[in-house]
Image 1 (cartoon, rainbow, N blue to C red):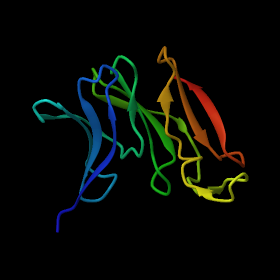
Image 2: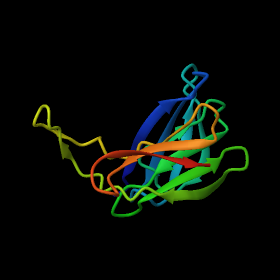
Image 3: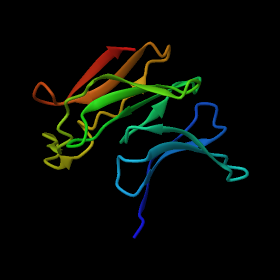
Length: 142
């Protein structure tokens, strides 16, 4: 049986297309980032990636940042979209486990999912992690 996964999606900064992660068969293997034209529904396979959980592009849509999800990966990846090249930026080290909100007493599953994004000038990546204990925000130079 063949399975597919359509993962995290976002709109490019100019709103021209939607982008999303597509995984064929086992999540993390044969994973690609794809673009979808909202007018024509034409799909473009942008590039193969390392199984991101939460990818996002910069303002110019020239770079992509994504986070691996434990236990398979605890890395932050950056891709140059014009070259279709990906590199490891750093380890996020997040457990991605739920934390109980002290104000509400309810668990929050998103506090330490890294959800990386670029600074406005694309020179830094910002993400969250609990690598040093509790939820915190980290900034890394690209």
